[in-house]
Length: 312
Ligand SMILES: NC(=O)c1ccc[n+]([C@@H]2O[C@H](COP(=O)([O-])OP(=O)(O)OC[C@H]3O[C@@H](n4cnc5c(N)ncnc54)[C@H](OP(=O)(O)O)[C@@H]3O)[C@@H](O)[C@H]2O)c1
Image (cartoon, rainbow, N blue to C red; front, side, top):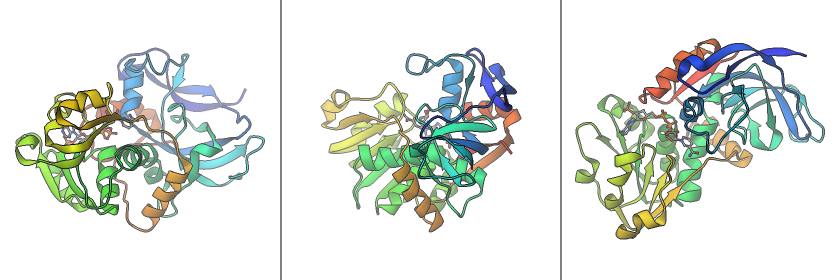
């Protein structure tokens, strides 16, 4: 059996359950690619899964190789693969949202796209989950239209920093919440207004937005209904997802989003990146062997952009 290095968990728990160790190298089935992974990232779902919070939705057998984002080079292809060949540089996320913290990973050819030419592998790996979540939240679930106003909670994080820029490509007005040290960063991404959530209650200064993109949940979400105009939407990435019933008192729609792989959207995102309209930010790069530290940083809740894990 061929082996590879991978970061896996054998039980749920704190960051110390993550083990950097030898694991079996996977083989591609029909329609799949075996990818030599150059970089992956930490998404909050990785540590939520590690801690056991996702068990009711995602109950995989142990050991679990975590990791949703991928940038790398196609090493071999399964039968029936038509879109990619050995040696192609690709990026994407797998449907199962695990398996990428490894030297080799298997993905369906329909879940990935050619890596943006202008990015190295580390920057490319920082894109898929964050950009697809932002895209699907704003454009598919929220139906954001040109000229509309969107309030983005958690605008400086992985999803938020993509959402600010994507909303601007549609000609929208963007208001973002973040702590003061991230305000210059958000303005640089194109945010029209920034609110320091630590010193200002956003509901005191914002009203009648078309969409709230809630990347925080809890009381931030509860206080958001009142700032949305009638017929507007609150779109949340954080379970438990809101429903139309939750917004009924304000005549606002409440919607949740579970990100899906989408090769066509990844291609459109790569074009935005290669034409300079969308810029990923990698705040910190750590080797995959330091995955515990990377999880602790992400779990602190104050990463700007993304934390990348360098695999090779
Ligand atoms: N449903 C899905 O498919 C899906 C997909 C992707 C992500 N998610 C979820 O969406 C959430 C956001 O993901 P992410 O990757 O963007 O997370 P992230 O990168 O870890 O977010 C970190 C950012 O949150 C900001 N923040 C923390 N508390 C805040 C508050 N009270 N108000 C405003 N900003 C605050 C921080 O800014 P400061 O340092 O300035 O505080 C930091 O920049 C997570 O819960 C994640 O699990 C869900």
